[in-house]
Length: 354
Image (cartoon, rainbow, N blue to C red):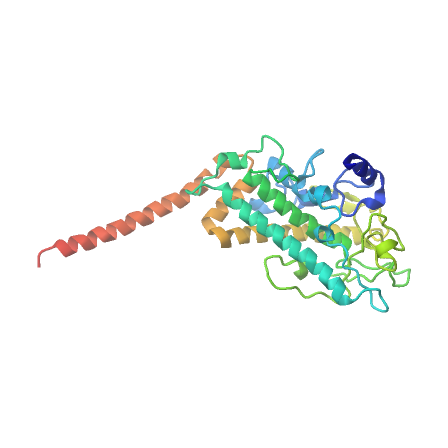
């Protein structure tokens, strides 16, 4: 049954419910290419010293037939709208659902992604031993990370896969919503042509470090998605803004520059909507990477967070990150020695005859 479903999904272009993960059925591994353009050390405008080296970016972005962390939701969360920011559709004027219902669906996505970010922070603890040194077995990438299996125990794999699930959702937000795009000016506004907001990235809606509900613009919408994704909508999506009407999922993306061309979805072909969605997703990906590192510092302290970041970004972290880990031990030792020296001086003064 799983093979039959996989074959159906691969052969039916409308069933592709997000930026692409595979390289067929109209998809061009868009999630992988966005992630590489955002965070890979080989990208033209990468993430500076915190960029991910070749094998490490493979874990996060995927490679060859591997989905990677960013593609994992397309393996085991295909029909979970919260993992893709789907189902938060709304249109003013006689729409079959309220603004409050649409906002609730969007907050489900935000809550889901906050949970995934928290998982990444917790998983990172096992990267280091009690002395702040990288644990070799926890960063071993000799075999591919198992992004869809609960049996994955390597901390680097678990952390990057959990974070990849965050990236999948935030990237989909820019493709599946009208946050950054514009409507087709040649057609009237309606369920098949919802208004665009033309807003910049990163979006305050996706502030995953906060624990409070974000402010949602009244006209913000994502698409209703069912397996038979059409315009106009059918089944549960009848009379609603659909994923098919709003998504900007597919086109060509340069993994080095992030340049976006040749869109193939109707909304993506309006003006530069596809390029806007990709640019927003890249900016948001970099923001979420900064926020993950900031959360590591809050949870584990600046020193350990620095070593954890090194372990996540370097392909040979046992050697490359050793000096960072031992600096904590050295500082701790010097601090201990200073305290001991003070105690000895105090003790000596107390023993001195009056």
